[in-house]
Image (tube, rainbow, N blue to C red):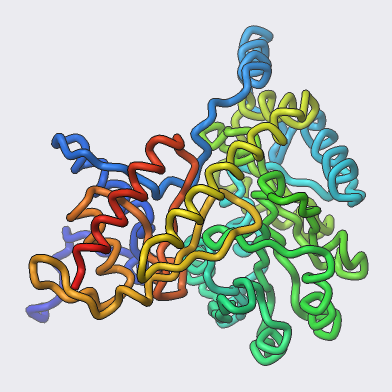
Length: 410
């Protein structure tokens, strides 16, 4: 006789690795806000991690031409030769990094690049150092593959950058990877070459640790700051660095789903094995579009970056004008990561106590219809992330609503 709590033979049973995870909190908040909007609510959603610009016309034209040429078949497993050549040229042009085409992979988004690399290298119990706050997928991908995430907080007083002493303490004999993201999602913190130096010096002393450099927001960097990538700053680390990038953020191509990376040939080959059993090649049409993005006119990057900087300045100023909230000025990406410690413990007009950053974000959505993401979703509280990749008018409205909501607390 079956145990009363045992599932029936027909009952769905998720795997242990998936059952322990959930859908991204960012997506959950976005879905809830979108449903409120569909039901007639006046909702401002500031959770999306994608530019509000359209894909540039020459890129769309290149995709259309590819379709007309009949480039609608399978391509080489991990990227067409032409696109790999363009990526190699981009790495040389923008980062001073030399990669052969055998050292380059193209996937269906940068998230797949990360997944492929970790799937190809992690054994159960292997540790991956993830500085917090982190992009939410880092943690879940490591866990789903049987790895052990080792979270190292990056303190606000250090500009949300990794303290080399904290890194040194986190490294063990089981450490396989560290994930570095600059500019950062969610904090907007970025590393100059000088700021990377002490972190990379630690890694030089630990040859078993590989570096995953997520450079996705490379071209959204402010105030004249020069972008730096780990393998560029310290060439001795290039042989154990995977430099990850993509066209999603810089060229407003999130839906095209093209990510890419450069790294050691042995790693790239192992990642291709993983990709061969999941998606196979990325979309042929999207690859043609990405080819134009990388080879075409790059002036759009600076123009759009200037627009994001104007929005950043307005949002940071507006948040810092609200009693109880403080916000550092991010160096890049299109997010602010504001501290809401000053409102924790206060009471809403309905008598509920704001106990943490999640409760504060829930309050903003319920009370004034502004959807933002709590810092705890990114592994660091009490903060909240705003994506300012939307119109200035909507951002002004959102700031006014947040100010009203905070003023109503007692």
